[in-house]
Length: 107
Picture 1 (cartoon, rainbow, N blue to C red):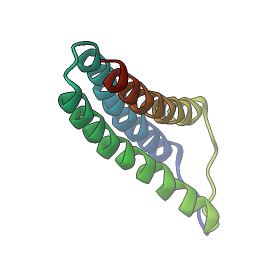
Picture 2: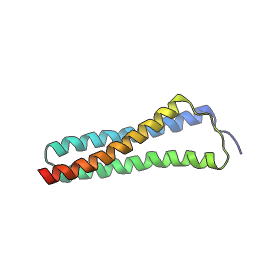
Picture 3: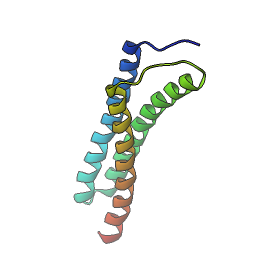
Picture 4: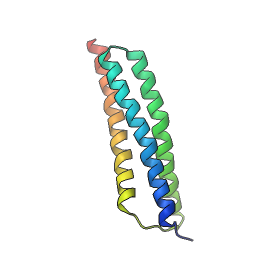
């Protein structure tokens, strides 16, 4: 059993923020494509976002696995922000998928 140093944990937090932020940007691009009735392109953009978000989720899961194996670390505000960023991006992705269905149905 060991401990993750604050610098390493900050690196993990920044990685989660970066990856989920990239996914969030792609989701917003998909919203624009939806409004322009470019549904296939919007769908493709959401798939790209999903792949990026999976990377962020994997980074987060790796951290949880370390914790479960007995490796300790102190949570700071940056990690709280990273967790929040990831979770709101996951929720935004789910909303975007539903909105794409609605746009296709109405449009």
